[in-house]
Length: 490
Ligand SMILES: *Cc1c(COP(=O)(O)O)cnc(C)c1O
Image (tube, rainbow, N blue to C red):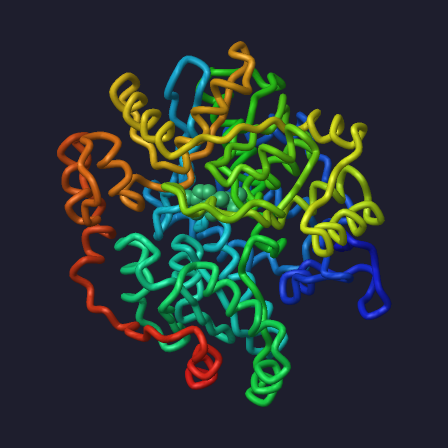
């Protein structure tokens, strides 16, 4: 299968590229993104065939249908990483929470958030492509707390890849920071910045565009790549768990095969939701995809009104920081799929030039046939955390909690919902402890202990262990010195 481009094709690039090429250099003509030329049609036969398959068997067959240029052994090696999740037989448990609400838990991997679902296998795939081509890659990552640990974990000690990960010192939870600064491998560099997430993100963008920096890398024979969710190498692994979760509902007798469900996704950069959209297009019976946001509700506004307007919005810091995003990159792939390349190029051009774009009413109707959306404030989220724990015995994190609001406001109660849980309670414990017990501003360890007691849950050993692991990554610098620091590391 080949990949085409969301904003049309300029003369600087081939009209189509392979999967490997789309992974190594994810930015396409006119600043667009790569998308598959066609999607494989899975149909009801595929679902029936995999009713009793393991997660890995399902994944392998789905990836095969994409006919990507990755060796079968590499794919096997990549998928084998799901064996390290909490339950090797079922890396993604789906739990019934209320009569028509099922929660698919995407956080049972090594860094306790859903980024592992795609980044774990992606690390093997990228490293194998780099080795095969005898090339060396630098992955630059700026993180608000979940992508960083997952990227470091997947690339640690992998050949032909180095990672430099920037995080805002003081801007992440203790658990997230410890996951990064205790990583110890010669190919990893973790850099704390005196600033906020936007400073890290802007520094990264400056570096990607810097002629000096790129020349210095070329001298060292290193190319730049990115591991964020614009990379289709991540998206492809995010289609699988939507199909798996649907099949789980069939297996549990909650639905019959063919029955439509809602997919309710806590969204930031729209990678998770895009995976669900592709699964639907490939034949999964879906009623609608419901987009859940926090106070940074630009996606709700887009889906309700057709307007995407950054002019008077600023990113608000919330209790669900992995969704504190206003420029949601993967929406572009939806625009392309619904309205084509010429229109996508125009809309994205408007966004760059005017900080805003607006869909026509016909376009909005098309978008609303696929998506509905609502947003949930931090206080509402805490109430959902507390009530769902008290009434249904289910503990969730603040990102997942945003789905409970839209579950109430956007779904027809006769249709079952699969909502996605994107982080374990251990990763955002101060907010959850506050929701459950009212305690304020607890440090992570204190909050972990009080939730553990309140909810009668063990703190997982891998989380507890972080607090006694030696800190090996001690660099904290001013943002002006990032380039120098990275070059020193290479
Ligand atoms: C990354 C992340 C999200 C947002 O996912 P997108 O694919 O960017 O929409 C939601 N919750 C958590 C915990 C995350 O880490």
